[in-house]
Length: 214
Image (cartoon, rainbow, N blue to C red):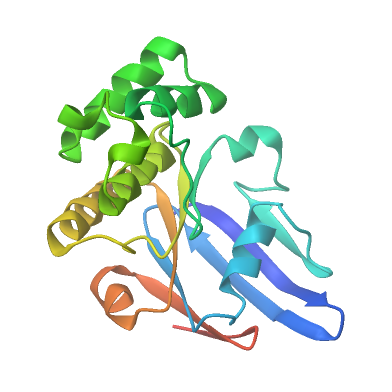
């Protein structure tokens, strides 16, 4: 049995009288792609924020890597939010190296890993360009590279293919499959059923904060 990366037990979260997440329970295992599928406003992003300890559940428990989340465990996670954001006025390689150092890499290691990922993503020739000079799709690929730069054990990605053309979707998909094959766990939040059918090993359908697990 693969190791349990995330264990969620009967979590709920309300904002005033609005119940955003209503009694969710599920596990995510190493070496799988687990999809959170549901329409906008279903509770997917709230669930992700609770896993990352950005907000706390009103009740229920969340365990990551066998226990409560901690700063050390956060460094084992890569997170690609739906609201993308990179420093626009510096070069691609500078921003990637800086963000890699924030995750505990040395400057030299962060730069080396950044260049290797840019090569895989067909972006090596743009390494010295400012982020603002890249197309939206290129920026999306850079942000994905930052997500996996520090070799996390878990990545959480919100609408991972937003803004990508078919060729670049395939490149990112291959990197996700490579990460999974290496034993990493992936939580993929999306409202697009075709992405789930193509990639996910298991899925949790969420609507109005409630679940159906497949």
